[in-house]
Image (cartoon, rainbow, N blue to C red):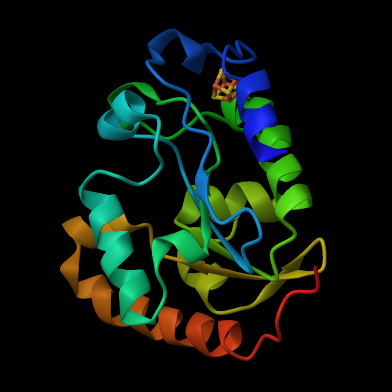
Length: 186
Ligand code: SF4
């Protein structure tokens, strides 16, 4: 299902980000994942490979997941936009809105039991709020009945190592919730 949807949108031109696209970054991971992680948009490495979170930020994300006893393959990782914003700028509101239905469809198919939104752009877009990252981190939201956490984007942690401690505190909450889940009904 996910593979056919990926194929179906591979030539999407619904927003101007298609102009810089080498490969569309649909997202990858376990199609039956209990948890979905959602970042902002592909960077240079992701644009080349078509894989989400494979650059330096991706390597840090892999380490963060391992620190809470999770392998990347167990979760599903995607972004708010599926084509790279030029120069890694934030995706603009019209680009986010154009791409969002694809992500919502993925959430619908995967039916995760936890969402972890990485960074302010992901939090503001999914939760339709203008709250700061600090405020979003303080609460657990319900998005379409799915408990939803917001934390730092790994690329922000690369540039601001002082945020690693609060990010670890966020991750511990997510870990405790994740491992309290019962097996997903098939
Ligand atoms: S970012 Fe999304 S909406 Fe824009 S062209 Fe790429 S796939 Fe289409």
